[in-house]
Length: 123
Image (cartoon, rainbow, N blue to C red; front, side, top):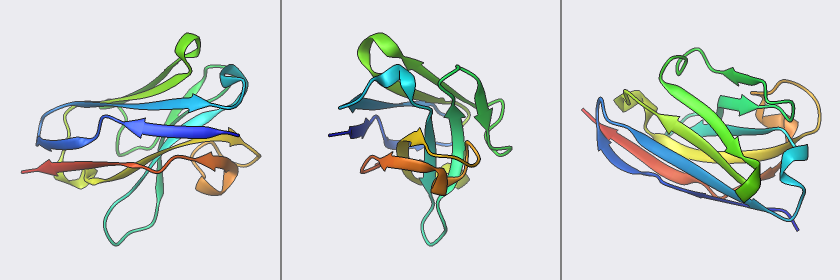
């Protein structure tokens, strides 16, 4: 069965960096588009960054120039490098896999989800 396990979250001061990882198993990693989503406290889940099976990427406007999505097919891992973090980046971050259809940053488009990793940015 498909499993996605996120790691790398934590607490950081504004301006700092974190790198999130998502270890995937149970499917051919290179075949699926994948994405990172986040859900701030009291708000809806939103798309952050996505990478298609072709390798093309997409980002939310709020993170462009600060976050970078990448993946290593050899070790079945998706990454999100987050730089210049701000308090508004505080959220639970989730990875998702298998784009069924729809937009790359649309949460309804993905079949599989991890349990999430918390990112807290203090001012």
